[in-house]
Figure (cartoon, rainbow, N blue to C red):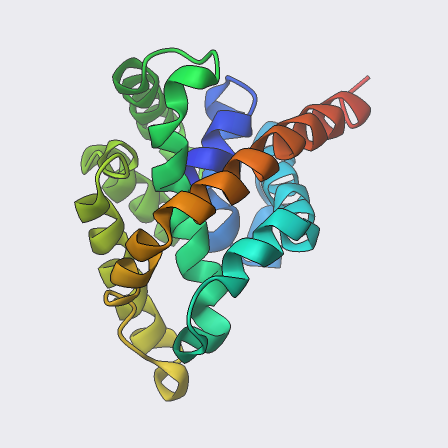
Length: 202
């Protein structure tokens, strides 16, 4: 669910940004039917997820949360990392956050029709609701955790739990989690840039 980070790493095209955003919303059969440039974005997203899952700084971050969150610790850290990304944004040599998100929203709305119907609707809600920009404040994290709670209750009712209270634990660990994110994100950018270079179409 760390949408903003994936979109920072995407190539600056509507197709790559769309693919990176919808990767968690598409089934394998649907991915196969996507335009090649969108499919490449999906594959980048999944490669980035694999690298993230193996990184020791991410493991440290997950380990900072109480065990009560169990399997969901990785999910809530993922969401909080998007918030921390906005907190160190000015250090990353990126356009101003407001301008960058405005561009993302335009690209995503323009490209949404290339996504499967359910994924396209999710894209439109994210862009029209300006959700990417909302991550700059803890209240935006809270809303994201509330939405994820609803999705889990719908799709995995036997595992459902309210993730919103996890925000208090995330905020209590803000300083060490920020250090973990600072250790992780440069490595992630290097990995993602290398993946794009090594898999570039001829």
